[in-house]
Length: 395
Picture (cartoon, rainbow, N blue to C red):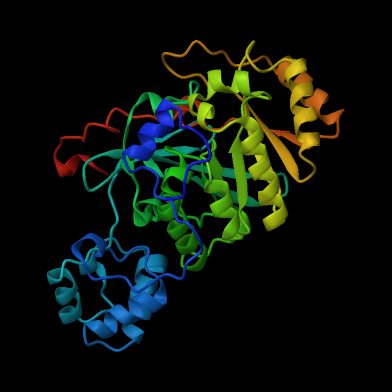
C-alpha cells in the first residue's frame, strides 16, 4: 500500500487498519484467475477468462463465449439455468465450487418519481442498497442511472450522511458491485445507461474492486466509460493512483466546504487530507487525464450555503486553474441529524454567486426522497449485524 501523505484522522485510520483500503498501486494487466474457493465466482470474469475456464474443464473454447452471454445478456442467476451448456459441464462447474455470484433482492421500494431503491442480501446476509434512477427528458430520451455501493456501510462517517451512521462491515467484491447494475436492469426491464459509484461506502477505500467492476461494466455489460462516475470524499494518494489508469470516466470529489476548518466539521476524515493537498491532486488528475473534475457540494442551511462561502469556493477553484464543475446538492434530511435543507432562494443565490465568477455549476435534481433513496440517505440496520431470516422472505 502506498505510504500516506499525511497523518490519518481517526475514521480514516480505522478504515486503513481494518483492511478497508484495497488500493492498487499501478495499472496492471489482469492475471489468470486462480481456481481457489475464494475466487470461484463467474460474474465479473471477462470473455477470455471464461473461454480458458471452459478449456480447463475439457470443453471447447466457444463454451466460454456461451458462458459470457449467459452471465451478461441472459443474466442467468444459477448454473442450473445455463440451458445452452451440456448438463455434464454444468454439473462439473457446481461440483468444483463455481457459482454465478448473484444475490437475491431482499426488498424494493419505489418512490413517487419512479426511483427504485433495492436492498440486496449478500451471501453473508448483510444488506446493501442500490438505487435505479429513471429520467426521461423533454425530447423523449430515456436515461437509467444505477447508483451503486462499493462497501457494506462506510467507515468515514461524514456528518450529513446516513450510511456512516449505520456502521461499516467490509468491502464489496467486484461481482457484488456488478450485480447491482444487473439487478436494476432486471427490475426496470431496461438497460442501464449510466453508473455512479455514489452509493454506500467510499469507493477509494475499495479501489481494486471498484476498478475491476468498472472494467466489467465497460467491457462485458457494455456501458461506456464516459457514462460512469467514481466518487470520493478524498483518501490520500488514491486520486494519483486512479489518474494513472487514465479512465475516461468522471471523478467526482465530495468537497462540501470552501476551506479546511469548515470541511473538518462536516467531513471528519478531512483532517488526514488537507484541502490544499486534495486540490493539488485534483489539478494533477486533470492534467494527466484531460478529464474535468466534478466537485460535489452538499448545501447545509446556515452552515455552508452563504454567499460568502460561494465566493470563497470560486476563488479557490480559480487558483487551481481550469477543468472543474460544481454540482450543488441541497441537503436531504436523515433521521437523527440537526442539519436542515436550505430554501430555494439560498440555493439560487449560491448558484448566482458562482456563475458571476465564471464557475460552471448545476443543482442536482432530488430523486427518490420519499423512499429514502436520495443522496446521503442510504442506510439499513444490517450493515454491521447480518440479517437472520428464512430465504423465502427475499423477492
